[in-house]
Length: 345
Image (tube, rainbow, N blue to C red):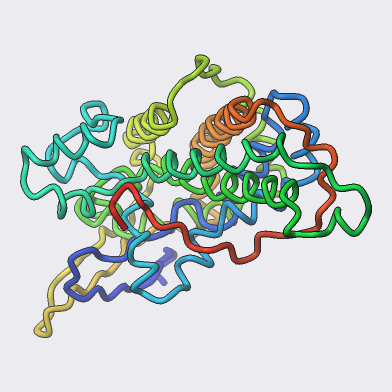
């Protein structure tokens, strides 16, 4: 098509909270958790995770794959947990509190906080919730008796196995939200670029382009992550998320310079009240995506670095329990949906 690349036309009905694209797609999210498993610094945890990167990578994708396939009355509850967009209320990432009660108080000065919190999103606190769930599971490891035979090693109900499985699963799912934070458009009200004539940038940048990269993507992410500054001891979860979000927003200028637009996007409301969107015309991914590559690698690396730090903190808070006796083959294919209880849901 005119030597360019159309993505797809999206029809959005008038909805209070429109569906938003996933961040980084399956490959990017998998890479975040897979590489984080090689970036942890606690020796016992590192030995435990180094053969389980594939498991953590799968768990990292659960919120975008399994949970979003659940009935709308369940999946819809989770949608606002994937982003934070304070700019829709005239706030910056910098001025957004990391304490949830302070965040709600801030929203209350601008309107009905019970409604605004769903519109602005709660990404940072979703990660914090899963961190605390992982710690809760991990603290049950040390008091539990180790398996004594091969049958007990595969017994899901054995408290030791159950505690480690719960820790792993919550750690991996938490990783998804670290990935969401580093994708610039998960931190903006104009989450797909239509306000700037760059419609379609979200999926093009976070999913189409990573699919163009070679098998060395993970190695490059790890190399960059290892050079990033370390987090200070006892840095809060929400502080880590805020830092990643701020860095992602700071990348926007560079990202837009790299985003070649052959024809701007358009959007209009038809006679049925539906918004018809035509994405921007861009060069084919094979031509353009390599220009984005260093920035995408850096952003995914920030998530992997922050995630590895938080995984280490979970293990430390649990008292550094013995993980070596865990031999279970149990795989978190379809873990139960975790309701965002901090929202009263």
